[in-house]
Structure formats: C-alpha cells, structure tokens
Image (cartoon, rainbow, N blue to C red; front, side):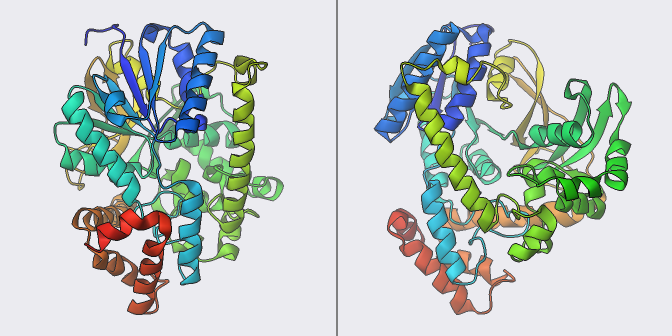
Length: 459
C-alpha cells in the first residue's frame, strides 16, 4: 500500500467490547486513518452486534469517518485486509475459572498454567489449545486471502502464540502486542516517583510478561536512582498506606524484591509473576502483594470477575440510543498502541512501539525464532528492534526458565502428546506423584467445553 492510503483493519474476537472501546477511541483520534474500513468478526452474533452498534455510534458522535462492517465469517473479515488484529480468547473467563477449580481440587493452586514466571491468570500456556487453534486458523486465512497483511497478536498468551505463528507461518508478517511494559513504566514513574510521564524516557526488554526496565531518564537525565531512593525512603510508608489494586503489582513488595534479586525493575505483568517465592499460597501472595494477594489470587480473581460484570453493565449503557457514548467514554488515548503501530508502519509518522518480534540477535543467547518484547522503531513498512541491555542474572536465571515453559507448551500443542503435559507437571513442586498429575490433566480435559482439546491430546 502507498503511504497515507486508507486501509482495511480486521478485528477478530471483536465481541469483547472492553477491547473495542480502547480501539475505537484510538481510531477516532487517528484522523490520518479516516476513510479506512474496520471489519469486526466474532462467532457470537449478539456480542458482535453490540460491538458493531457501539463502534458505529461512537464514530458518528466523534465525527470519525470510517466504514464499519461486521461478519461471523473469519475468512470474510480477513480477505484483502491490511491489518488483522487478533484479540480472540475463545476459552473465556468462566471456563478458565472452571479449569482452575478442577486443577486446585487436585492440588494445583491457581491452575495447571500457574508456573514459574507465568503466574498470571488467563495466560493459558498448557491449557491454551483453543487460543492456539484460533490463531493458527486465522494465520492460515491471512496467508491465503491477505498475504501482505500485518498480523497483530493481542490475545494472550502473546509470547507463545507469536512464536508459534512465526515458526509455522514464516511468510506471515506477525508481531505481538501487549501494553503491559509501557503501562508499568507509567505507573512506576507517576504514582511512585511523582514524575511527569511526558518527560520520561525508558527502555525495557524480555519476553511478554517477563519484561524488565533497563534504562530510565527524566528530562534527559538518568533517573534510575529515583527508583532506589523511593524504595529506600518512601516505599515502606506507601505499602502501609496503600492497598495494591488489581493490575498495580508493579508497585508491590514482590516487584521491589525482584529488582533486588535480578538487578532491574520488573514492569507490568512481570511483577505479577516471578517464582514460587511469591505465590505458594494465599498467605504468601498477601505478604508480597498486599491484602488482595494480587489480581491473580483467589481474592483477586473474584474481584476481577466482579469488575468485569460491572464493566459489562457500563458497556451496555454505551450502546443505548439515549446516551452519548463520547461523554461516557471521551475520545482520548487508551494506553494501547495497536493503532499507533498501524499509523507508523503505513508511513503516517515514525514512532517507537513495544512489540513482540523475532529475536534475530536482539537479545543475545536467545534463539533467532523466539519472539522477544523490545522497543521497535516503526516507520513505513520497516521494523527496527532496539538492542536493550538486560542484567546478567535476568539472562541466566529468568529468561531460560520462562523460555523452557514456552517450548514445552508449544511442543505439547504441536505434537498433541498428553504425556508432554504430564511431564510438565512432574517437574512442578505441587506434584506429589505421577498419578496426581495425570488425574488432574484427565479431569481438566474431560470438562464439556474442552472436548476439542481432549480429542487433540488423545489422538
């Protein structure tokens, strides 16, 4: 495509109005994309209709000139697209919660997927069959129907899926996107350090949800020492005074301890993860993350589901004809950068976006075909990942552990070998016997909504 031309953006899994509400605000502000087409796709007709109605209404109120279409046919959505944003999470929160309950019954606290450096709920790496399948079939369609399109993987697990697609679809222009690192940097520098984020420069790198702050500047001057000063002089009072809320774990005692242990500060979802040191049981989680135990504890999970139910009620209001959506949800930047990426890569202004891209030497010691999360200079069809220095301890003690989990999850999915899942749990400190591991996996696979996953792993 020529720079500045209208584009077609296909959004898969568009029934998620919480995601759509972020994208619609950013699109409304992106005047240089006006005239483009946005096609929404979801397999749930009622949720799709709601997102479609909301987007049409919002654009009309904001005076944003886009053509909006909808379909339940993925191939139709992808055909001739310039960008495919995959936000589809077919497992669903309710079903994921049921899998956690079954796993906990067998002694696997917080689920089968909870493991070192992957303690984040709904980041399904071992039970993520449906997510992997949806992404793979979408990638097949893109290769056939829109071979020049950019495929932006936004649904979790971004690390696993991006690497999987990069390996299985080598001609596909795939990147992964997550807002966790920039939002974590913003939370740390504004709420803890009291800085104006407009004057903050930072660099971070790692794997998705395993990202560490390597460089921090404020108004052009090195500012990492401000983190040390906050921890030494103010953090204890902060932790006594403040309750760490959901998705605020960047400010937790766990994050501070990871910094002390590994030499660089963890950002965003990284601070929710770590080793079993922070996650062995609820009491342990509360020690490191405060009274809620973090958003991934059983308390945090219940709160998360409640907040989602309240959000859905607010979303229903946005579609009502008597409510101005732009007043309830003013057109301002959402914090997501998927639209920034589209603008930059189509020649509408060079910018830096944190993306998951093929490593190809960006982080030494990591295989070329593994997708790493780094700052990327994006400009008119070109991506230039920046090399970011990570501490020796992170490269030796953190990245290899997380990488091994990713490789095991992809191997199990690709081979369909149920024994591969059992072998994963045999290394898990929660496992007391091979029978415990096998029984837990068998019962999770036997859940009615997991029929396709069960057939895959029992073929």
